[in-house]
Length: 581
Image (cartoon, rainbow, N blue to C red; front, side):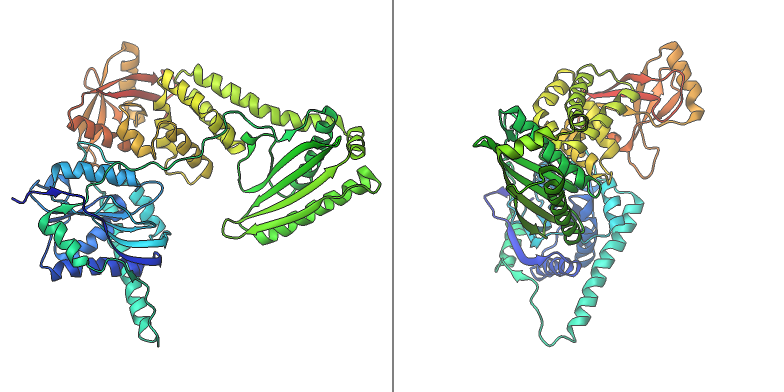
């Protein structure tokens, strides 16, 4: 038996490319397979390190005549090539790869690791096929959705299992990649000058492969260095830095007037403090006001984010100029200081910024103050005050939270509403929210929300979930489920089992969880049974996976009532609390 030597081996990066394309992926995989054949080296098994890598594992399996194996069919003596897909910001992260490699190396020490592509050079795998400047999606949408359903975070005791649907989709996916290569190769025959799309980085790939497979000099990933993040200011900063109430009222009315003129055409957010600065689709107005010589120096940024940037920016510029023209004819009615306007367009970010600098002297301030429609201004400012009231109510509801499906729905509807209106405000109170979740032991409700929305296409829900998970240092809901040991879960049941539930509720009977292979598409399904042995329902598959892993690693599983509705039968009628001790 060969003994693995863990030394400071360096990741071998084979190629660099401007962009990720299907045919380039096949080129790189083929290059790796041919080098292995040339050296007469062959692993005993290929293991997909993440669900997105299954098509690439299939390709290498076919070219090398090596079987794809998962934990149940592997032995510690075998040389296992672990294949990862792409480094992404959501599922397959550096922390994911690090934890996966550490777990696999405990069982299978002879396991070289390979990642297909990343936008940077990695130091946590043995081979990186492609370093790509623009790492964009090249897989089909259907494949990605199914891969997400089959994705799980590394955890002690788990075993990989893919549905038959996903296996078939993966076969179709790699065929599409190979088809793209054939089309490109056929087109090359008619080109006078062949363009070199892959730049070679490692000039001695055979040596790197030989060292990994023959000498066992593997890259052992250390702890991923966390990127330093800018801290939010400890205190919110007012954007109108003026003590004179007449100036404040006059400038506020001017800003609300401009905001109202834009609201008919764009969604508008007017910020009065640093906590309200958060870019979104539409208009963000950021004023900065200071008192100068008895008047006000107004510097206003109007930020537009839009898919139809050029068309909408022309509209915005026209609206702003028309509004200022109306101010001169309807409000000032005489010659006064005029604003200067400048603009910057960033097409890559789909963002344009209009800069408006305006000195309002004392006479202009007095005119504005005298002509303010105070009822109109008050009604607009009351709406903004409701934002802070909503936050106070949210924190109160969180402190006093008692689990019912209605309370849960109301709490997260409030969070989504606040996040949509002012993400910076929620981030500012992140420490307080985390403190409440810690003190009340309510992290399990974040898990409930995550299971519900993790695959949602809603940007607001996705961003809110990422924020809540980040409060405890988690990258995604799968990492949360893998690391946490307490879950609140709804019971998946049917109306025919309602009599069993009624006996449990009326008699106050105990309940228990039992692992059974009911579903061929999922290796372990946890069923809920009454004290009398009657079937009540099942636990959602995503949670069952992590419970099964923890139970197989030696943890004890406990289950008790969380919420049972005695009157109404629905998908939210029965909830249980599961602990892994």
